[in-house]
Length: 186
Image (cartoon, rainbow, N blue to C red; front, side, top):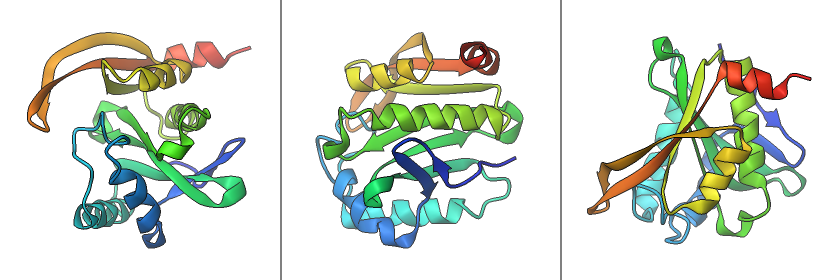
């Protein structure tokens, strides 16, 4: 099973990354405000290059377990962020949802639009049974995005990840296929 790419929403195109996306990726991935709630520090040029190389290579994996996509503002043909579904393995039939957006794209509903599209596609075209996400307890914007995308809070993960020289406490959100189906049924 695979996603039908590119995915189109009202304002966005979600597509595989291409080598020419480097400058747009580095612009947001090197911004300390953007990466504040990420498990990594702002990326250097070399780190952004390595990330993009990994994403390009993952597009050829069989089966494909990482669906990390560029989020393009369709009207401007401009990359404004990334969103992803990452499968632990095919047998688990679940995926981790994630997203990151350039600062100038915040507060405009783009993350919600992209997350909703990935949730729909994950259930309809990847055949997932569960989609989950984690976010720092202080990341109120991501909490709103996850809830608008239909995920509900399952747990608080106390000091579950050590990164950037600190222990992180996160919320875990999830939605199951049956819950999603019920929410979209007439």
